[in-house]
Length: 206
Image 1 (tube, rainbow, N blue to C red):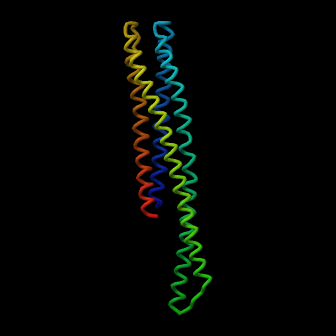
Image 2 (cartoon, helix red, strand yellow; image 1 turned 60 degrees about the vertical axis):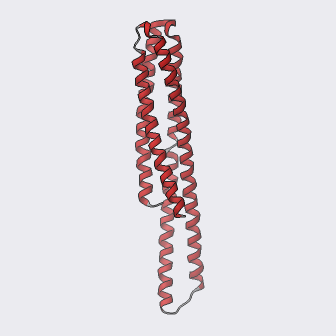
Image 3 (cartoon, helix red, strand yellow; image 1 turned 45 degrees about the vertical axis):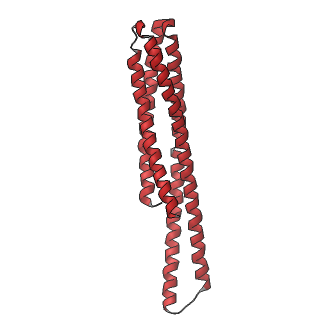
């Protein structure tokens, strides 16, 4: 996992989090608007009131799940920086050993040290992969939450259709909330694919 790939994860995480936060704010705002409409029309829109509340609750759950995405980024960067540091030490010992071989000098201590650095690098790479896999699991958990939110979108559209006679513009509200959920879904789907691609390349490199 090279530095370019790490920066890709950092950049993608930042933009994904911003997209999610913006879309969840939109969902919450539109759900509040729907709840205002529900109160204006009383019992006629009681069913949609339940849907609007579910929108808000699931949006809050998604926001909480999304907040954990960044928690894996710093440890991943730290692990990678340690790998770079260890590799620089390993390269230094390797060059010194090559110079000594050139002069027919054999130093068992240097040989052992070089092998030690190699083991350390392998261990750190394993740590980085573990962190990356956990990040992917967090993203998949977020995708599950989005799937639940999409189900609420469907229920909302059904309730809106049943409430058309009230004059409340719930079909438009439901459509807008559905678009906001779709934006989150697409951003997370793209982010998940990026992480899976990086994990696949990292596994090949091991």
